[in-house]
Image (cartoon, rainbow, N blue to C red):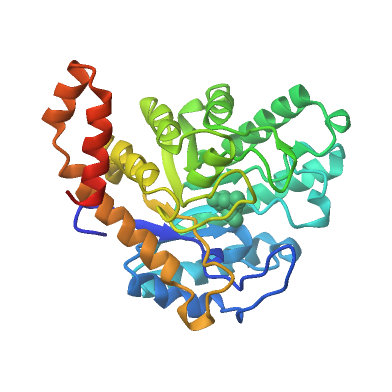
Length: 344
Ligand code: 3MF
Ligand code: MG
């Protein structure tokens, strides 16, 4: 926890080997055990999990084996003074998810996606957390005519209802993203995610996770996406990072591309007391050129950036801002914010 009461998290995938679609790994893989001590060293409090980050090869395991392995991971977390923030079913790597999970055109593949998600809920329970994140990676299309967007929306709702019914205490946070790996995803924005959640059988247990890069890729402003979700008490987690325009999902360090955009995300989180609601997740990746022994600085930078921006947010002259709004002097407001970010 930082001095302002915020807690921080990342996933084991955020310390990674640097492979990209055009080249192999450039850094050695670290085991989960090796990554764990790094959390506290860098000032983090919580771990985000894919189901198979916690229980590798879970497809071949029986329920009791999955539970036993998850309990062992819980013990490792306890030993390091860490908690689990959420578990996300990884529905985009298995051969049965090539055409999507819940919205696959094949019934047995859809059934696989549901069974796999139930296992993720079981793992979350064993890890002592009640939050499941659904990044709906392949729930979309490359070929408009191959799927049906309306049917897909109903299938996604059915899947969410099935999970809410399977585990009566799980909460689900949908993580929207407009593209990549799919050409077009069915739940591209906060608005789509919230609309789906409000239709659910138990809407109180469905919220959202906002990822900065995903909002930017959708052509939207992340702070407005945060504000929209928080207006309805629905922002339960964030993946703060940064993104240089409309290209591949970069997962750059928070604030590395657009400082003012990062500042505004922190400002709306802080105004809505996010520290009382959730954990600040940083879904950032070291750039491929970073040497292995220096490949956690993106996490340090992102956490420090958040804390420094909280300080800037709280030292803003809010009275002066209100005055400039009253006189509609938005150019002076522009200058006030820019001067503040530049330190004078
Ligand atoms: C993809 C993502 C994912 C999700 C993760 C947890 C690998 O763009 O952001 O990171 O955050 O699967 O939901
Ligand atoms: Mg993410």
